[in-house]
Image 1 (cartoon, rainbow, N blue to C red):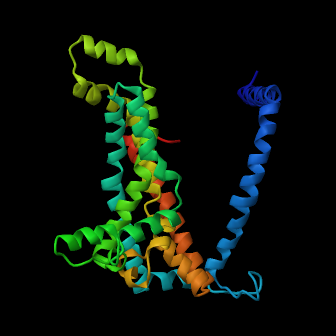
Image 2: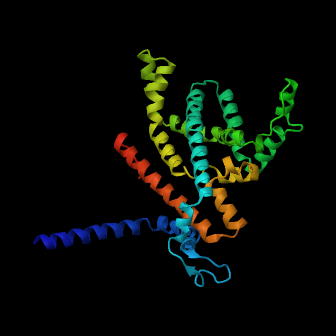
Image 3: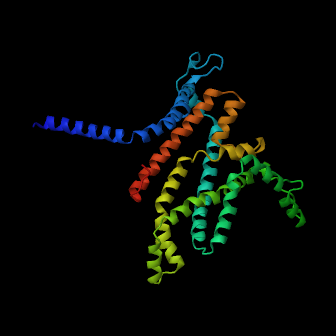
Length: 315
């Protein structure tokens, strides 16, 4: 048989095996259909609206009746001083959250893994992840009351020591710290669950062998728990890098006001203000497209670095 015929036979054989596999698992493939329809309708179909970023969109004319302006909206974006400040705010808040909040759940998971009393361990877990289930509206209202300059418990304590009350929600110097603190209060416990699950997947025989060899708790954490968590840590870090330009839009929308736009306005809230507030749909779409493109690029770069230095990747 010629090489050409052999190649065609191999392709037919591969196609036949694939079709046989599909027929053998037809029920599983049918279960995929609702999910695929959902993705098509609510994820991919709305992407048609990206066209608005290249138009001077007129809400009455619609997409088909609006004037095409090419990359004019993106040029406007790059020459906008306001957008530059928004980008700086976004990067700073995200970097603060990564450097401060990303390691804490890892430490909590390692510490809880060393707790031997299950009742105490489960009680702590429940307490620290319960705030995750509260909406940002509730949390913002809670902290507004706690930190209020008039009657808030924190400012009452400050007054009792002879200090002046602080308006935390209108102070540009404190607002970013407030955003990071409230994000940590809400999400650290929930994020720790992922790392606790990673530790639970480590074979207990490794700890037993290490204990027989004389390794203490700290040594076991360093040599067994942390390496066992590494794939999960890398995955979570890459995903966090991918959302670098997100910075917590929902959180900031419920907490900020015009007095802290200088330090708290991020890309997500900027898009909201320009799109729905000022009805500048084309410009806000261009900003959103820029945000998504950079996020995708960051995930790709993070995955490449992970594959190069750690020999691990998410795809």
